[in-house]
Image 1 (cartoon, rainbow, N blue to C red):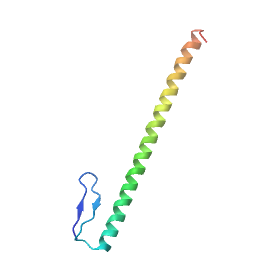
Image 2 (cartoon, rainbow, N blue to C red):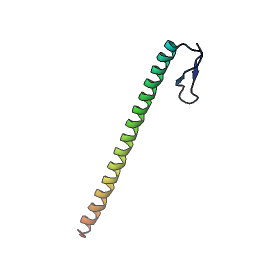
Image 3 (cartoon, rainbow, N blue to C red):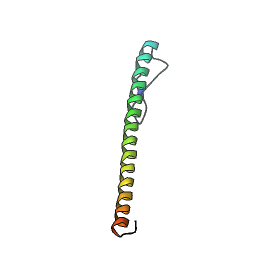
Amino acid sequence: MIDQKTPNQQYKLPHIQNTGAEEVARLRDTVTAIDNDVAALNVGLANKASKATTDNLQAQIDDLSILIFAGLI
């Protein structure tokens, strides 16, 4: 069996000399690995967006607190 992989993530690549049965298993492994990587990226992006929203809200609260303390609101 020829065991070629992608250069970055080392996903298994099909090869013309491998049997169909070998390639089905390899492609299933590759699709599962890609799915896991995409899910991890989505979690990371959601966490980053949540932190940015929290930081933004905190900055707005701080600004309002200053205005209220100064008697401007």
